[in-house]
Image (cartoon, rainbow over all chains, first blue to last red; front, top):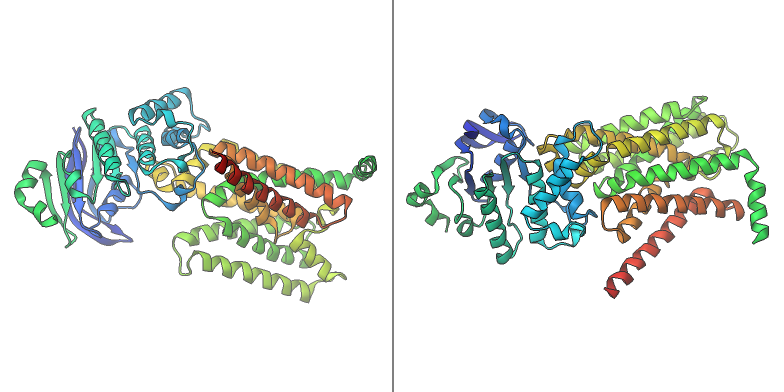
Length: 229
Length: 283
């Protein structure tokens, strides 16, 4: 089943196009990694898919099944000293199901607990978010994204600022979620370790165009990888 | 000690003293509720700017001899709040500059209007009480107390009903938006509630000091509490205690109400700060 399909998609800010002519799709169970150098427009594309900024033109079809994507944005400065417990942050992922209801119900609380267990942070549930290590914080945000997602996770630089060990753990956790059937779209800088797990690659070039989209096997044959260094 | 209690008893026989305590407590409670969100969203300066706008509007209202000043001050402050918030996202003049312009401009124009058109014999007294709230809380009429009561209840209800959404929008606006929450609507709601609180608070501590009432309890609570709900509750408790204590001290020692309350808030912040330091070292 196709979850997301882009054809002739132009994305950018204020009608100014940053990336031209994107053609790619994400199917159920896929793990797509978006590569590209700084300023290639990776985060802009992510924000467009997440619905934070409107697309400039072209087609972007998101399956009704994933109307809500689980989005893990890059951390903001506000969050660094924010007094909130792990539980409070994770359950805020259930916000979309709330509608006009003011408080979370039992089912939503269970969802939050379940996702904390899935990402291995259940023991930290009463700890203060700002006192956690970078890797733990990312797990909390991942659990929150899982609470809001129905089948598709979007991760914007999930290992940014983590030490190599924490980064490796994070990649393995994401790969594990993928094996459970969650489709994943991930943006990453650090090419070498990022490429161990994905099934598909979308490579954005410096000319603000799509260089490559396809399976990881085809990608390895193109030789773009060597160019990236 | 007995002397002090009988003195307080004597004062509490006057209805205006009782009114002052009701209004003071409610304003302190409301301002601390939104304070946490304001501080964490980095909106503190908006509160400051708005209070100056409220001063300008108050000046216009008193020059026009309106019977109920709130009827003019409230809408003007709310409109400015919306304008400042919208201006933050897309405008010719960027965020903080727009706030500086609006706040200093309305301060200057307000004072000018009062000077040129006011019929009052005690002009500097009027200005001083609007800016620092020195006596206005003791001259509240019954209707004003009722207006304050109704508005406070509305603010508290809005906060409780939208608590989870306010948390989500404060902690991570992008994520909330991506999960389908209409973040612009909630930012607007937050701005309107802040405007209401500022207009309410002008009676208690005056327009220059109201942002202290919003910011200090939240900052104190953030020192000693570790989750959002506890911070909100703790800041409400600190704020109400400081307001009551400040009002008592100001009655007994006849100090200005507003500055006494803010002094109590500062003292509470210092205590919380050292509490955090000592607690951390012992761990």
